[in-house]
Image 1 (cartoon, rainbow, N blue to C red):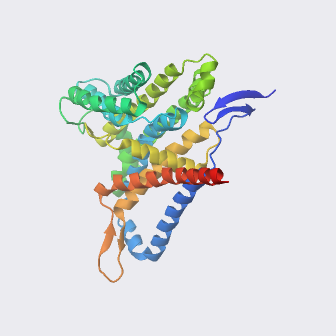
Image 2 (image 1 turned 120 degrees about the vertical axis):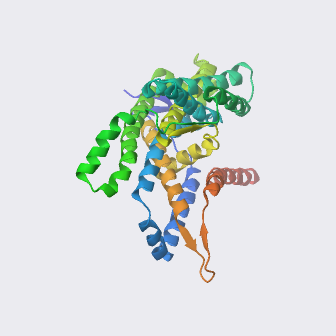
Image 3 (image 1 turned 90 degrees about the vertical axis):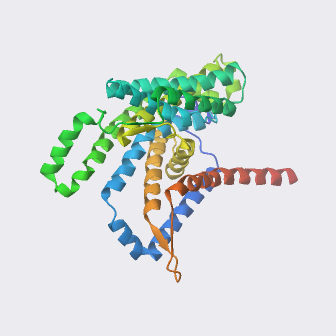
Length: 376
């Protein structure tokens, strides 16, 4: 007997629920594949300089990019929950990420266990999401404005928690500290000492991978529960789900809490990985999260929730690898003796433009179809 389930695209009937893919998504795929083709073309044309540059680059850079991608994986899942599941424009994550980092660093410096700082960071981020949800639902304030208000207030809260704008954790006991001696000895025994410098990133990848798998499986399970299905229906068809007796305001608050809790947890992980917590570390994070969602959905075209959460995490890893590559390579300009190189200060602008194009083209195509339909 077939069952009817509610997914992000609306009620679906069948043995296995799927996520319907909009027709406009082919334009996002076209954009991404065009960019990849351009990169490959440039690599072929300037292959010798590129090989020399990459050959001189330490493997530590690539391993570090993978580790950061996994560390930011919870951010990608959090953005997916608000952007795709709830259809809610949430900027709170730019404040909940440094909030999680601030809580974790303050607790570690105060002598608390680094492992206890992780659930505390999740709770802190979740409270920021709840604040946004309450402002939006109880005061009827626009969701985007509500998230901006919480983001602005979170800056002061983060400074109060940290007591200063930056807290170093290089000498502190983190979640990685108990395992460092084992990995160090393992690399010394099995490989040349020249590879010893990568053992920290390898350790981080292992721990982040285990954590992100646990997070992914938990979110996948939750989104298939009764509450999770109600949350998904809230983002897709709130009128219908209200008619079934579900409180959509509660679902929005719950979704924002989970999303920002994951982002706060990611902030705590990255603070311990990078060795510091900074009050400005979350600036522009929403763009990175959106880039990860778009890259993951474009490349993998997920049909189920489990596949979608996997895709956005991989999208974040690809995004971090692309940034590492962009900061390394230099494209020589023939006949001038000069070259083009992306500076670290240019990364956010380039990412914003890429996300803008990927989001704008489907809208432009939809408007053109409406105009043609109205004329017909």
